[in-house]
Amino acid sequence: MEKIRLGRVTNAVGLKGELKVYPYTDYKEKFEEIDYVLMDDLRYAIENVRYMKAMVVLKLTGIDDRTSAESYKEKDLFLFRTDAPPLPEDTYYVKDLIGLRVVDEEGNTVGRLSDVIINSAQDIYMVEPHGGGKSFPVPAVEEFIKEVDIEKGMLCIRLIEGLREL
Image (cartoon, rainbow, N blue to C red):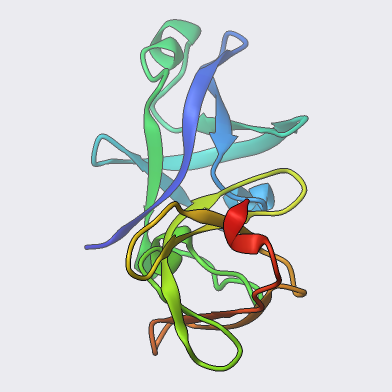
């Protein structure tokens, strides 16, 4: 069954087994919309969610003291994709974007999407050029991203002069 990576445990918080999590989403409130997380293929029910700045603090069933919580440092949290809440419009899982064929506004193949860099201002899509060469960044903003069609495996971008040279 396909899983979605939600975040990574960075540390323990307090004495009652809470975990500080770096979220791999720009919508950290997603943790309030789910009932469980997976770590090492084991399911842990979410008892409580709170926030410390950009971090998520989770209290999970079965992790009840600081010593136990500390043993989960550097563990990734997952969710079965079938249990994920629906995404807002024009929002995609990185996993679905990687590998998309990138075309320009005239339909010419530019390359393929090789990576997504998650940034605080906006995400950056890294495009591996068709025929080889150095990958180049495309800001994931409306001005440059004209269409995303996951079913067709296509991402249409607006190419401006000098973009490939960045």
